[in-house]
Amino acid sequence: AKTKQRKRRSEMPLPHRPHIILRNKHKRKKCSPYIPFLIIIFFLLVQLKFLFLLSLPSDSADLKKGKSTDIKKQERLLFLNTINREHLQQSRYEDKSESSGSGLTAIIDVLIVGSKFSIDAVQAQVESWGSHPSIRHFIVATEDDDVDPLCYQTMTLDDVRDISKCCRRKMYWDDLQARNKLTDFFTGLYARVQWLEKKKNPQGWMCAQRRFISGLVKLLDLYDLNGEQGGGVELPDYLIIGDDDTYININHIAEMYIHQPKKQIQTETATSEIIIPPPDHPFMFAGCRVRSPAHQITNTFPFGGYGTFLSRGSLSRILQPLHCNDDTGDEFEVGICNKMLRKLDFTYPLSATVGEEKYFERGNSIHRIFDKYIHNITTFCLHSDWLMGYIANFLNVSQQVRVEHDYWQWQGANDTENRLHAVLGDSELYRTPGGQCANGQSPEQKSIVDGHPCNVNSTVCHYVNPDLMRKIHRQLTTHD
Image (cartoon, rainbow, N blue to C red; front, side, top):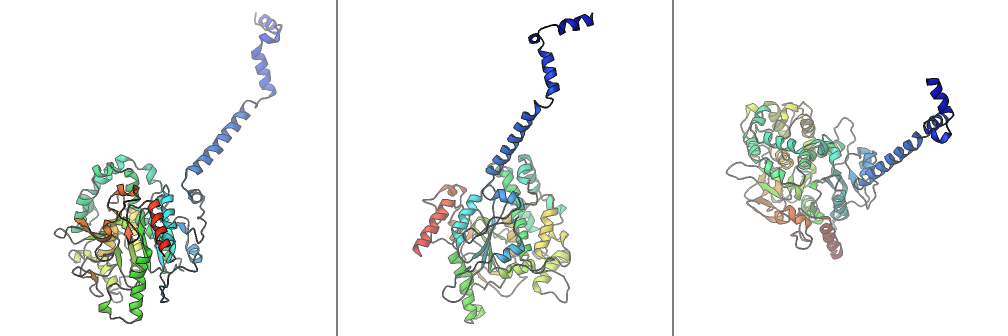
């Protein structure tokens, strides 16, 4: 019966045997249906890669390829994760400072704690106040410089809530064996869940808290003259750390904190009459200094968006190896070694730490200690500004402040934890904003050009958008 069926099918006209034609066709061109399909898939993948590169911020495509941005005199923006010591040493500009008619020079480096998704804001800084000839290098730290470069992708809102709840418990500091008056104060002040949930990007904010110190450590590694690789980059007169919405009048800063102190030293002005020390002395100041309630605690920290300024002397202290030999160390080294090795022998504030002593080894510098700290600690319970204030005030990286006159002191390296200075002396936020602290107090002001408190007479400002930065720069250069 089957033989008869096959014979009848073989006698059918071809139009009635489509399945046989298809089978024979496959035998003749076995791969023909798949080749077009594979070509289409390949074409789509190429298009997707192209669209992905277009979606990256400007210069980020080069970042992903491991290439640094093209550095020109007009384009001085450097990405921290792509530059190296040799690159910085070679990119010295012929005219990088103003003489102010006295032959004095100013060398300023800038580190912006920003985001690769808002490079346009940093570019506006470079084109405006960052174009000042006193600025040697303008560097930005992005998500690629975080301890976990994928933090902004992997962290969830639930993670943010968990971190906030953990950091608002004193038990956290008990576990680190760093419970003290200062960390108790941090516990009560740490960002609440309700505040974080109102932010546009709470996950990004949480990830960025370590970025300040991870970015600073990377830059200090390039400066480090005593590092394993040696041959560090010359330290600037001042390093300025800011956000991507920070505005700074470099003319004011260079004149007040670099030119005038150098002039006073050259004219042999008496030390007691010098209000601001020259850059070689350890000196840190905040564009806007936040003072904690005096009846609760003696503590100050910078309002980061207004900028934090570190002199060459303070950078040297942060980079100084701490060998902790009792008979050879200077006063600064002895004070830090007491904290790292013998803090239980002292009372607050000399005993106050944030748990960094766990990572200290003889020969480490402060920047190396905190490099290990941020890479090893599971939950980071410090706002970035608090850590900068802690380094200035409790690790003696800055000379002491005289509260009554807001001057500085040559003596008393271990006398008090009040060491962070303020721009112009009166730029302090305590109940109400004083001095430069009034130049941008609300994130809503970031969308304002006309009516923003920042203007050509301002020294530092916060929450400034790119259009306003360019406007102020045009007014200053036109006036000049």
